[in-house]
Image 1 (cartoon, rainbow, N blue to C red):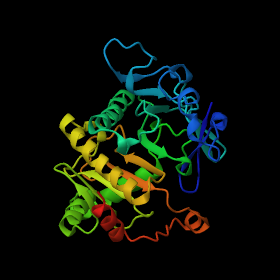
Image 2: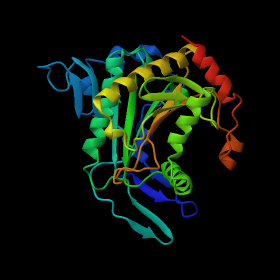
Image 3: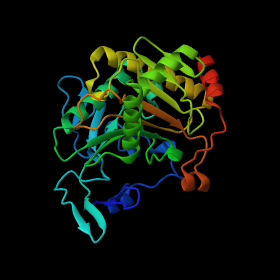
Image 4: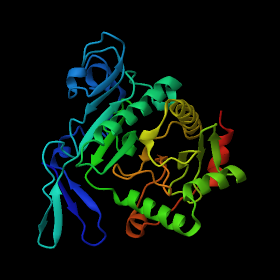
Length: 331
């Protein structure tokens, strides 16, 4: 079983997961002949994945068979294990618990060669609706405190398979990075009685120098202090602390702006590897007036080295204003 261990200095939790060492490790060797017979995510290879949790498919289609256009399966090599109890305990001065959680893979399309920006808006909408479905289902499990949804595209971004997919991990604690955002948001709210994310949206729309795209319900912009070149955030214009509160009309507009942003990134950066994450509120928190769910997109254009690891500072060679201009002008 995986194990969760807490760093006693800064409170960061680490997953010790030996099962992950058995993953296919093809970073240097990954080539497109993986598709079809060799790709476990391609249609016809449904028996190469664990049994599906949900699938979007036509009526009459048999479970774990072709005919789907999106399916969710448990990760074959999970970072955390869903069966068991947390069994929190001490080891001298140290804290640890069983590596309990959920780890799922969302296979976004049956087409091996199409990534999220290549899909039509309805298919993108289905992806985000599936995220919502899984959060609503998993938050019923009292062991879970947080759910992170993320996507790794390309070997440089940590993907071991090139078929378009994203992942979901439910954890029994709130990750430190998210907790820092929530604490910062609350401090800003306590001082100004306003949401820092709402204020960012207002200022970015007013100045329009870092905005990449917008529609009636969502805005995409380069953050004022980005860690990485062309780092792009997508936020709902109206305050909303929980992604799973997404309504059908909102999902339509979210799909539209996601397609626009990824089309621009692909055009300007020649289809780069990237990570994206959805930062959401903790599962057990009620509506938060000081936190705003959002998507962070990080193209892999630079490498993190010793200075970044040692200090927490990031060196970004591309001003966000220039990045926004490049993306805004891209068709």
